Each structure stands twice: as structure tokens, then as C-alpha cells.
Length: 69
Image 1: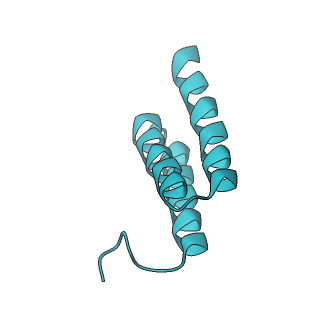
Image 2: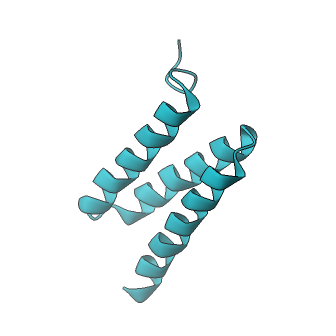
């Protein structure tokens, strides 16, 4: 299996949120933003608008952090 198809949708969303959190913790905001966008795209592809909205909220927070710098 490829990494993008491994696990349930919930596991995949969780993995992406954790990865973004680790990157944010390391100050790598642009990379975290890319991961969050990947999660939003995945959620939309799977038809999960609730999860897409959660990713979008985090994307907005991350973009605001980049602007405030």
C-alpha cells in the first residue's frame, strides 16, 4: 500500500493533523500549511465537509500567523 491510501479516513486525518502540529512546533509554518491543505483536499475528496472545515480553520490560523510575522 502507498502512504496516501493506508488506513481509515479518520487515521489519515489524524496523521495529517499531528504532522502539521509537529511542523508548527518546529516553526516550519509553510510546511505545516502545505500539510493542512493536503488534509483539506483529502477531506473534500472523501466528501467529509466537517473535516474539511476543521482543516480550513487551521489553515486560516496558520496563514494569519505568517502574516503577523
